[in-house]
Length: 159
Image (tube, helix red, strand yellow):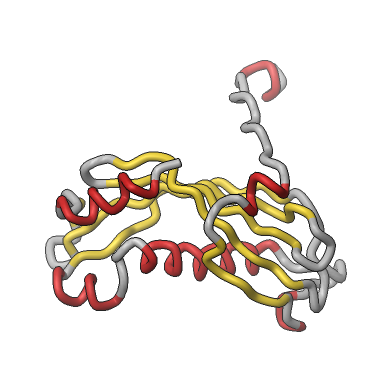
């Protein structure tokens, strides 16, 4: 039997941005590590990173026009179809976090962005999330193109 490590070639790890680079992108969400976030190891459990990144994602999308009013008026939404997380620094009870966002790619029906979770208490990058979202017709439950006015706004946010 061959080892798994010889069967698969892993892609190169993405470059981690510096704290200064992360803070150069718009801050779209802030929170504090709450008691319910803490696991038996005494730090924030991984499910809460996902939770905070999800809340930050919706804040980022709303800042670009994909908010509750848009979704209700157009019967559209976004589904996450890919999410890759990197844990870079431990977060503990009471730590303040801020999330900064960078739009990476836009396509007719999807977009890709990165979220940077900053540990503002200890001045370091705590985690990153790269996500792909697909624009969806909520009645047909199928992907659909973004309206041109949204795409134009997205293009202005590419960095």
